[in-house]
Length: 218
Image (tube, rainbow, N blue to C red; front, side):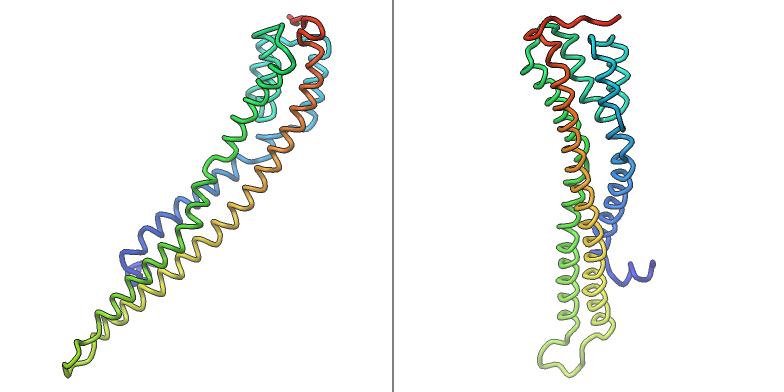
């Protein structure tokens, strides 16, 4: 491996850095985007059962917010009723939508960086190719001289061009595949969160001021 890096020349180092970052982002997203961290089965039904006759205590609200991403969105509805028992349904939905936007932003963390690596790696490989071509042309003897070109420099230029092109593609292709995979996964999670939040908001609307002041459970 060290011999390959030496043959590829200095342009390979930005590609190695990109590969390390891409691998770190992919592992981190696999851990953070596990379904158990985002969506919990029957969580909405359980919360609706708890708040059927009133809003639970703040301790329960805080525990729900720490439970999962979905729990954070649902807890925002309870917290809005705690902060303002006479809030309107529109204010309730606005609070849950704000929490949903924060969750969605966290779900998309590092995805732009991964997409940037997928786009930049082929360009860095092309840069190495150009530098290799410069080495190749520089290895040729000046016109009018009897000596041939420098074979070692010619071989080094070819190594730089080919290795950097290959490394750029090797990094870019997996990065693009995983970016698209995580992008689709996040979109699915966001849709599920929106549907669950809408269902829970309809459940909490009778507790708003428009349908009577909610009774806070102790």
